[in-house]
Image (cartoon, rainbow, N blue to C red; front, top):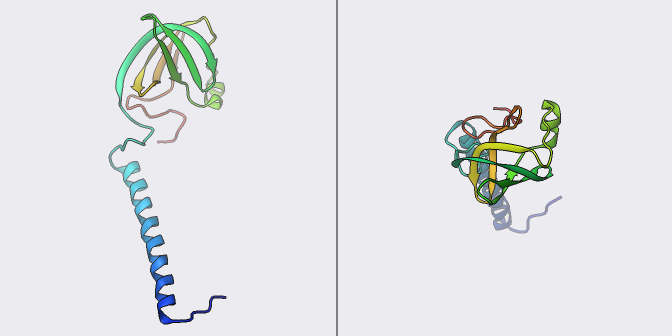
Length: 134
């Protein structure tokens, strides 16, 4: 049980709760805006620099695929969650030649499509992951 020595102690406690409440509402507002409003940078849905890269799969350590591009560069491709790949029956093996169509963001490629003998769909046109509810 709290015992207040002075009126100021009560006001400080109430003021502290108000700051916490204000911070909570601010976070909620940012979340609501990101879901129904624009697309801030931290959103999983983004349209970065769109790229198409052809090359050979060097290594797969889910969720990262290392791709040796035809241009001689190595690319890190973010595949998404393993359970999604398993659910869809998607498979890739080292040595396979693929084409990745997606978005470059920093050092990663976020694929929309990966093409080999089939088309693997991972994101929509806006870059939103298909494994997340819209």
